[in-house]
Length: 326
Image 1 (spheres, one colour):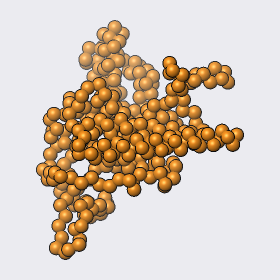
Image 2 (cartoon, rainbow, N blue to C red):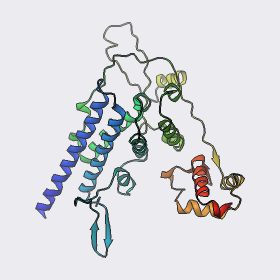
Image 3 (cartoon, helix red, strand yellow):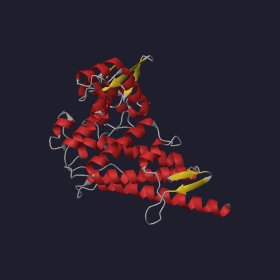
Image 4 (cartoon, rainbow, N blue to C red):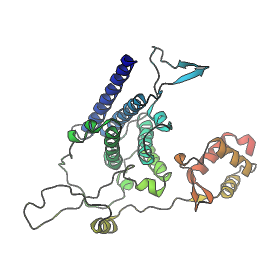
């Protein structure tokens, strides 16, 4: 037993160290001015870092994180054609009830996973600026959890510092998505759809996207303006005044539909045989009221309302099963 515990401990430590290496490499590449493939490299490496971190956590907690089929008391583990065990990917790790990761951090990671799916199939133009707030949140979240799960000594903040800039930070207040007109349509659409599916509280969380407003700092006394960046509490009078003066993104309330409205909308599109019963069966089959899926929201603790994202799912279902509803 002691020998097995030593082996498990050794695997856990190796996973943690590999996880830290991947995270550090991701940030160092992103901060390297000579590399143009920043965001793409960052996303891939941080997903690896988080995957290894959760594997190490499951190993520590004696949670099986390999795929297998249960045959009585025997476990038949899934293997690659070369005989290696198939371990859980990051999304499967996050879905497991034993995962220690909070909701907003999960949202941030799900965004990166979906982004990776978009960028791995075609070349992208530079997307660094538009996604930097989410990348920053991912770094801070990672540092928090590696220390929380394995100890302060594994923190990576001592290895990193703020990146110095040769270009000035623009003071023009522009819509970020409109500013990046060369952003690929699939990336732009993915960002909008993902954000639209979040509640206002989830979207505003610093664990989902760490947003900082830079304001030129002036002083009439020497020694007071020696920091490029100064942080103020978000609930301070200064932060409140800055938010009111410089806010550039105005959140709009996402459109909501009652179940009856969803059915009527779909029927008006030609699927006249689609009924309330069909709708109920569909959302139950897909567990669509699971808050993690962000298909809708319970209003005032009484009535469930569906977002446009769910309406689109219903539409796809009806189109795929046209013979049943036309």
